[in-house]
Amino acid sequence: MSQTTHRSQTRPIKVGRVPVGGGAPVSVQSMTTTKTADVENTLAQVYALAGAGADIVRITCNDVDAAVGLAEIVPRSPVPIIADIHYQYRLALAALEAGVQGLRLNPGNIRKPEQIRTVAREAKDRGIPIRVGVNAGSLDRDLMARYGSATPEALVASALKEIEYLAEEDFEDIKISVKHSHVPSMVNSYRLLAETLNYPLHLGVTEAGPPPGGLIKSVAGIATLLLEGIGDTIRFSLTADPVEEAQAGRRLLEYLDLRERTGLDLIACPSCGRAEVDVLEVAKEAQDKLENEKIPIQVAVMGCVVNGPGEAREADIGIAAGRGRGHLFIKGKVIRVVPEDEMVDALLDEARKLVEEGLDARLAAADQNAADLAAQDRQVLIEIQGDANRVKDRRAAVAGIVSRDG
Ligand code: SF4
Image (cartoon, rainbow, N blue to C red; front, top):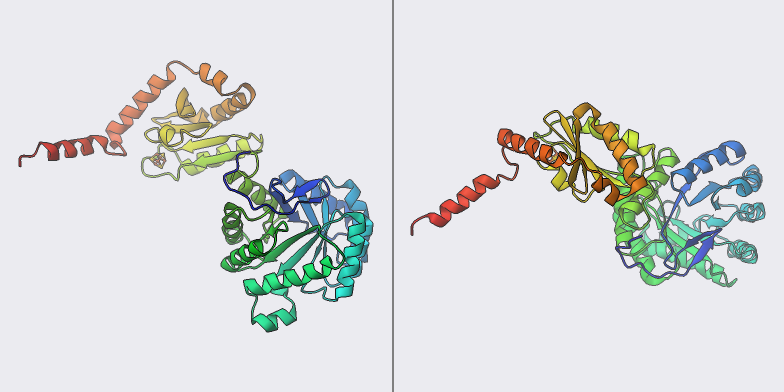
């Protein structure tokens, strides 16, 4: 894994077998949407979330039936389970009894210090961490009165108050979130929190809404902080199938070089008047075919051979279209030229071989005529369409200026 950012050193905790904080890889969380008492459907969703990239799954524990369901779900789950608790501290105790690997408490609605301390004692005895999950929409009434609104200072004050109660029981296995639905407020709240404390932080934009808006808000808030080195675990709160949340979280971490690539990274040009194919359609076909294969490489789909292979030379593999043919390239070097209607299948075939055999073997197996054929196609297109960079025109213009008298 290449780390692009210096990460804040936070106090490490463990949620089951998943380390959080202290320099551990940033983890992905999501939450089930089923009724927890419906054990089979909840477990099916937990498995789907784990398959989509979730390292930890949160499940609501909102009544006794849910707590009983957790007792069956936890031992059968492929990932650690966190019980989400609101209002009733007794449900936190029941969830602990059910064997959950983490608790999330909302300081805005479990407000009696003695109740919080009781939960802390029980969690401590079992070595279970607690997330102090502050949410702008459900902030403690006293803090709302004092700060006037859910400001970053108010959210952090709420977290500090809860941590004090936990500290009275010497409880330290804490992670914290200060979620807000307004992205700048969310970012500023976490920045303030990171300056104030060194507990691991769970990042999220709350109630972000359906995609694409919800995705954009989540990425804006979470990525900003991650790139500043803030954040140890993340959740996208989308109004969508939670599988989308897990996928989005995982992808974000891969794109930021914070987790190893496990899936496809498809890059494609946006298309323009030079495109020799319908780039949108070809990119979609390539995505559909390659995504199923879970091929962990970067693949480029480029609309023309004039600029495509050069602009996508960093990609592991790619195709560019030109004059009814597809140019298949590896790290910018054309290795095969195929008929246009076969180019996506050829790409798929070559991607599989690249993963199996490695870069050097596939470059060595390149068709010796491919580079010449590609150069010819490219030259003809430049002559028809003009050089995209107008190199000839610019050279002539520069030479004209230099040779001018006086
Ligand atoms: S690769 Fe070709 S078709 Fe795609 S945007 Fe660039 S110039 Fe246009």
